[in-house]
Length: 123
Image (cartoon, rainbow, N blue to C red; front, top):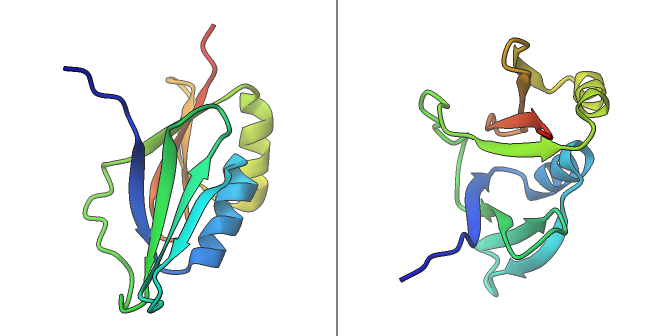
């Protein structure tokens, strides 16, 4: 029996704001977009263009207030081929929330408070 990664999901409070953030900060684009006929939810699968794995963001119409992220220990990591340029972009956007220079990594925070790890490409 084999398993393959399909997608990860987070819920967001403002789909348009999140789509704008993920495109600008990480270059992700919409692979699939589905809105319920009754308008109760919208699901967008975002892609980096490299394969079948997608990052799903879901908006729920009836959700009131922010999501409880607990201690925010969970995260999704992204590898960049130009760490310095990515760091510069994220600094200009004001979204860097934690840096660990000794490990050569940093985290950015999306509009809903989710942390995303940024890693340099290891050679």
